[in-house]
Image (tube, rainbow, N blue to C red; front, top):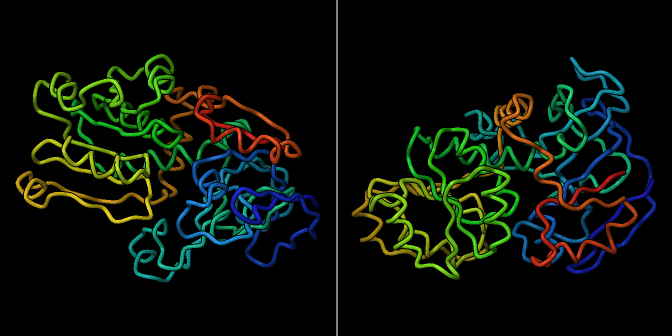
Length: 336
């Protein structure tokens, strides 16, 4: 079967490899769609933490079951997967948080992912497709990350939530903040993305720090209160550090984006706010099914996200172009 490996930063190679064999407790999938996410792009750039080369990328997966013995699933069924393979025994797993398992193996990051024709995955990772299209199923995982971040923030109806960064993860976070009843503010230096937030996601407030005074704009929007929730979806160290100053007293700051460096902020400014800082890693099964339910109810439209589409044999030639903001990529989708 054909596969595509990122052998080092900036370099892809198509290869022939043996068909995987689904051992006991595993299901063999025929890959139908692969979504390209920031993790893949950062791996190509050489800036992705927790990463080794060579690696077959791809964890936003829609597939057809080729062979399975998993209870409740049948051959030929359309599914997606939870690509965070967990040990099941560590303290996080025992607390019902397999998304931050001590020994987590993320498909396409720690282990080879879905950029190939067939993939063997643990039975426990399967997620029912519930009649969704392959395109929609490949979007469930990135949207679930946003849904999980909103769950971590414990948003209440009517509070102001600032989401910094409007890449695919940020956009999903914005959607689920809106669904939770928040007054949502999108911030980015990409005006095209901000316009997308307004026209496609019905986000009422946007801020561009490249052209506006952020503090003044946020005070204007929030009637001088400032946002009670800040969510970073940039993974940019400067943006993460700067955003501490935008938080209301008593507020919460959730880090969805991931950065290699050390976070730095004023302890007195943070302390006087009695602020809460937390990370949000991956997503849980409940988040996946919340996304699927939201799609089924029409609260989230998968068609909004897919702006670029290529066949599997075109990925190598097109991948680098998806790093260029001027190309207007929201989500690139690979068809197999």
